[in-house]
Length: 416
Image 1 (cartoon, rainbow, N blue to C red):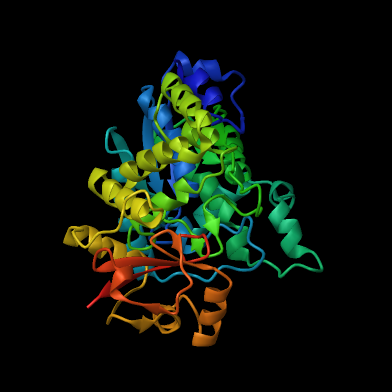
Image 2: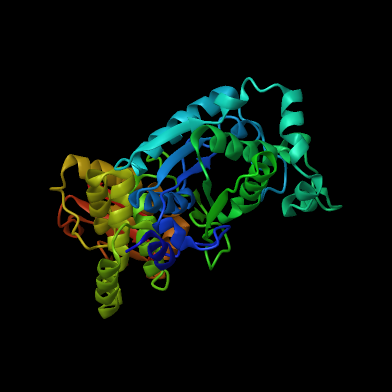
């Protein structure tokens, strides 16, 4: 499958300045994709665009991957209702190193050049920048940006000169990379379209050369309206210390049936026949969640490696009852399980209400008794309404107690 066909089939195209994307099949380009070090980790939202980058790499296009050490000192104001808090130089340096490592993980099978825009901004004289760059950026172009008009409105919070000028810095990135690295194409998420177009316009005004932008769709949760990967608990991070491999795996397992095919195309590297076969098997028995499992395995393996993926799958299978809980669990798996849910050790014949309170499934014994009466408590997948936990409940020396249906509301209880 050619790149242009793959981009269309996977749903990777939102908008582009390219008149015909089939041109990408005939001539390899030097392109760049950049991320600001506003955090010490990328999210699954960033991963969506990263998979587009991988598609370009796979088809022979040369990648320049940018970490915005300079732009990160200001922070992109687009989409923000209030002024960002500035990060310290130490935080930015630490974040840059973390993101560089994630680049190396995601793109480990491909060659790329890593650059930092701080390297070409750190010695840039302010007056020179105004003369050489600011002179070529029309104010009307900047004032017409939606986030600017919103922030400058009567209801808006206002905008500093620093954030207002962010687009100039990013536009110059494209110009510098065009002149120094031969970059003629920027890949970006749809929310970066305005900043990217400013770079295209600057290159045209300064050099009379043509440059292009390819923007991938911005994924939004159809139910909540939030950016993809944002939940009530927060963002889904690629860093295992911020989102554990098990929680990462479970995020994908929870994909809705009507979205799983789309996400297989975007986030996995399965080819078209493979995805078609997965969806066929999935639709034969929706209860088995075959497509969600294949999606979760594929993405978790990419980000966290095969060993962590298998461990995350086993923990999830225990929590969902696919694997029976046993005191013969290997120590590493038991430790991973304890990292995901509360775990307590009890004596035999202990009051269930007290256990529910102690492991955090109820705020008090009174609430716990109400849950028991309402038949909202299960043990190892079976409803349980007895008032005490005696030894007969423990087929092994541990049980899994759950409140309601969500497996995140579970606790591991070990018999001493």
